[in-house]
Amino acid sequence: MVGYAALFLCFGLIAGGLHWAGIATVATQSSWTLLAGGMILLMIHVVAGRVGRVS
Image (cartoon, rainbow, N blue to C red):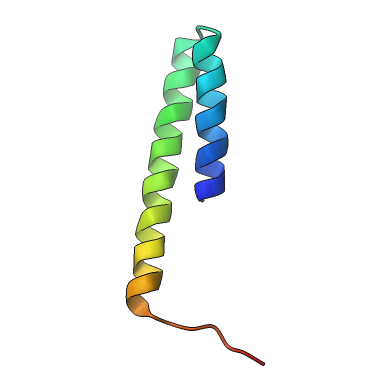
């Protein structure tokens, strides 16, 4: 999710540089939403403390 957030942030910055305000706003808001979702999932993973299976 964090990778997608970085992609949307780059796209939003490029759109902002080209003065495409509507597209830039949607892209940056999407990036913040994905970043927040990724951080929440990371915190759940760390707090749960579950370790993957090792074969």
